[in-house]
Amino acid sequence: MADHPAASTHQTDALHQVVVLAYDGLCTFEFGIALEAFALPRPEFDFPWYRCSIAAIDPEIRAMGGFRVATDAGIELIDQADTIIIPGWRGADVVPPAALCDALCRAHARGCRIVTICSGVFVLAASGLLRGGRATTHWRYTDKLHAMYPDIEIVDDVLYVENNQIITSAGSSAGIDACLHVIRSDHGAQVANVVARRLVMPPHRDGGQAQYIEAPIQERPGKSIAAVLDWARERLAEPIEIGEMAVFSGLSERTFLRRFREGTGMAPLKWLRRERILRAMKLLEESTLSLSDIAQQCGFQSIETFRIAFGDIAGVPPARYRNRFRTHQPA
Image (cartoon, rainbow, N blue to C red):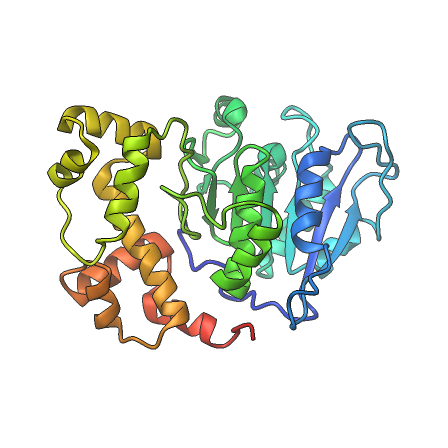
């Protein structure tokens, strides 16, 4: 889900600085996700990867599990960051240091991208940066977040939300999706796919996430629904009716609609629209087809309908999206 252009100012180069916050009581899994995505050397690419540093928020950092964490510098690193990663915070009721909140506000004001994983959202909420905006977190914390910060619009059925250069993600593994989203935003789908394969992860959650958008979790995708998803993807250029999908699945339309929502987290027409935009993103990145040809190949009846749908889901116009990846294609 993107309410603003996704990281359009973050075309990475050797100077792009990712700063991962570390604090006493650090959530080690979320911390490891950030380092795996941005600190791990990437010899498979022939362009500069991110420069990743660890900023100490506390004088001494004892992570969950009892080990201690060495850092590169203190909170002052935030002032040098292009992207900041906040792993799960040490407690929803633990007020973050004022100096941390102030540094995050300064960073956001100068255009820095900020990513939270799981309960890390409470740090941004305390800083006031989420006031009046949209955010998500782990399902365990959504009620607490709403009670503490009723001025935040909480989206509780997605893997992550991007709003105004802030990305908030749900439970721990959703942090991987959020990090892949950052990589795709900066380097395109091809690079994100390579990183995802190394993580043994899909580059996006099938049945939902196509980068830049919300991603419902597939909890019970039955075989009939999986088959109909593949069938529909092969026919995205054609009109597809719900009745046709139900017939292909071998279910009554009523049962099909229920199973489809259980399996994908959304209604069939919403899923189809999203898959068409995912296909359009790929064509914009990898082909020189005109916008009208792409619209036709993705099943849109007019270029204007395509532009509206693309903007709604991707958060940027299709021409701007294409231009981003033309300027930074891997060899």
